[in-house]
Length: 418
Image 1 (tube, helix red, strand yellow):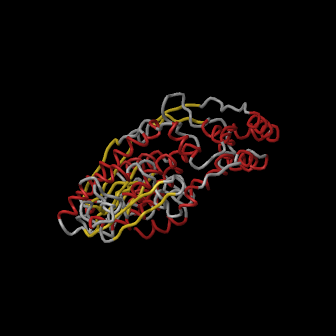
Image 2 (tube, rainbow, N blue to C red):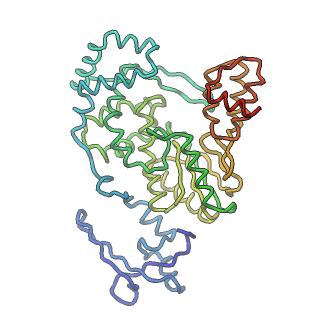
Image 3 (cartoon, rainbow, N blue to C red):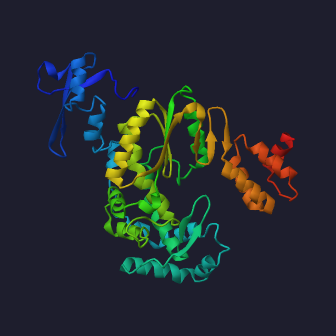
């Protein structure tokens, strides 16, 4: 958009007079039986600019007042409008068919076959799947109580661990609804999606930084207590915007309840998808309305790249208003800084030409190395892959008294760093 407050075109009155501007159109919305009348004219004289700022503008002039009044609360259009607005029905039988429940069990057991809960479900697999099928179709199914526990890294959080039978049912729902919602997400929302992840989010961020000079600005935003603040009624409305099968929506919402007025449980498979759905309108607002070219999100961390300082301040205010008004969320913190300082995002400090892991990850690596935790050390090496921190970590491993068995790829890199 260039500068938020300067644009070569502004809108004008619609009255077929000289104030209508050089271009004017009448847009008819057949679905709502309404007309949108828009005039356009060159924004090269002070009277036109005053007209734009007076509140009598249309969508052609991105004045702050007009964005607040019309675009902030308007419909957000997709590149593929027909697909974006389509609602899907008759999904309940697909999600909870005997075949899909069996394949959901196969998905749920992946990586868990050594767990007791998985073993106990598997030894009576046929009867357990049949019981799930009968309960869901009879409308009597209820999730079992969660096993709750605390984690303290990187910050204290309550984790809700579901029973294995409930994990199976969540996978059954996920298999059907994930493709429906995934096509509505922007391409730079990187969390909890097939083929995405932190590495790709960081790669995109670094490439985006290279498009701008060092004095351009970054706006980084973080939602306060995101999972604990989600309004389940708003979430249900967003889900119903794509799914018109009420029985399936009712089943989905069983896995959103924490027993508190707000929030969804951290630990559920479906909670990951619900987080994507809940902030998806913000993504489209930033891309379609604010017209930010380089924008990336990972869960509730949002980064807008290549702004002027005036744009960063203005956009922050608009996003705060959108979050509060539409989603009942608020920011925990925000950062506005020049690109030359880099950005902390998805566990990396990233500049145009280099990238390192954050200090906390380095501290955690040192602790795991000292304790000889093979699995954790290799996992953190994977996190550092492709960064300037990896050679340093490999040197620490070589100097450590504990023996860490490295995968072949890391062995070759370790030899090259010595």
